[in-house]
Image (tube, rainbow, N blue to C red; front, side):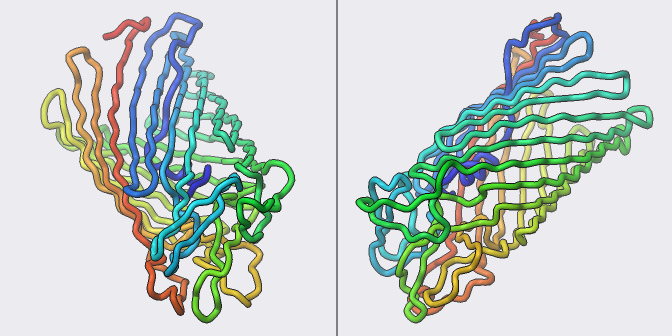
Length: 426
């Protein structure tokens, strides 16, 4: 994972989403549900992450529902900085510009100074207009030492066909402020030693995101539900990873001559289609989903997901899980830059923008306790590989693994409770 806020997002996305608000006041409660979880994510030799989650909903007698999601996570370890391996020891300046770190010969350069902590809160309210129509609204806050995000959303849902069909519209807007440690590097500026002032751009970076989603949920039968969502996202502003570099290599030997800070486009349009099918078979449940993503950076991905919940007894189940992802590289992805060639307008060596494949396999165990609450345990293994498509190596570069596989282990413990009518357990 990259030593940046964006890499933190990638880890956090892999961990699972959602968390919540407790103790909502107001009218007499009809029901309160709370889910909690502690997750751990580890890339051996690289990043380790821990995340605490609370997800709650509070339904009132007038049909209104209050929801809350609370997340706190911390990431530490070593993260790939984008440079290529070489036959000698490489020395890099830390993001703060006050110290340096080194990488052994033949090893992928990793920034060992990577550390991040984040807290995020999401609050929502759903209000029924009538028996078939509901309106929702929410606010979002996320804060890290170098990244702050504020957001708001609104939604409208309508049931049709005796409530067997539901249409939904949702709009979300986020405004982000990016204040990298040491300031924002000038695109393609060369990294300098700690005792030399690194030229920086003035002020913080800003980014605005608008998401528009249309959704359809259809009950195909008493045992089968199908849902599909289409989301268009428009992102404008600072999207460069301020902690990433590219190696500038000799055009004959392939040996690194310098390290240049990356540069990404300041506009991105993204489209995603997500479809899922849930089927109750006998006493078990099957979930199939497919996600297609594309953007104007040249990235396109296909993700297929399969879960089978086997109810082995009246109060416990096992759920195998398999996921596969295939992604094409961004148009401006470059594993390295070559001396003597003109600099491109934009370039990044971030492996998450490269051509890659990913596999996830895992198992979840769930049990209904004597208290009526639920306990879940989940373990998964993730592996990501990069074919190196679009990259031609030469000289010393041909002798090194420029696209090492990334492995990760994910562990989760979850606890859910239904506090029942008037907030009483039952």
